[in-house]
Amino acid sequence: MGELLSTMSTANTVRTLNGLFNATNYPDTKKSIKALRALHGPFLKPAPGTGEGNRHKRQRSLRFAAAILTDDLKFKKSSPNDPSKGRLSGWLKWLTWLERQPNNGANVAVGGKVVAKISPHDQIVTTIDDALGDGTTIAIHFDWKRDTSLSVSADKSTTGGQTTYTIMVRSLGGDDGDVMNTQSDLDDDYDPDPDISTAAVR
Image: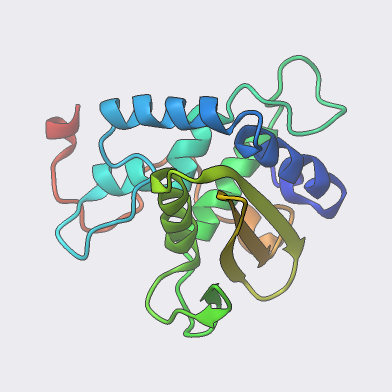
């Protein structure tokens, strides 16, 4: 389940994400996200300060985006034609774990400066949203390395009027116990304070 982000497969995972958002594919990915926002308004958008319930939180999340944008991609060279084989599940489980990690006051940085009031997950969403809203963006670059402490740093560089955003993540891998023991991805109702009933959502 957690094989996707084990050290052995990290390079392929990062390559998959960078393939979606590189200079060649970024325009098409941006169009896809725009279309998905027409269906799911909060899709990959930063959360408002207060007053948001489970459904909109889910639509904003990296996990929700990954389930749609990366469900048919091969995460590993050895994957058969069916790309999941548990690897998509492991990817979604890692993103669920990431979403639940708080800001510890020093583990999020933007442009080299510590940001004390946003979670690592939400900073990634914010950076992606910033990039999508920046007319000079040509790519979003992702980097991940295994570390026992979670940190996220975001930056951007502009050359000749073209901007690349970079998101660097240091964290546990998908095969670490804390990640593998994360609640099942099949259960979306982990928030103990839903704002609307199940009947209203259905």
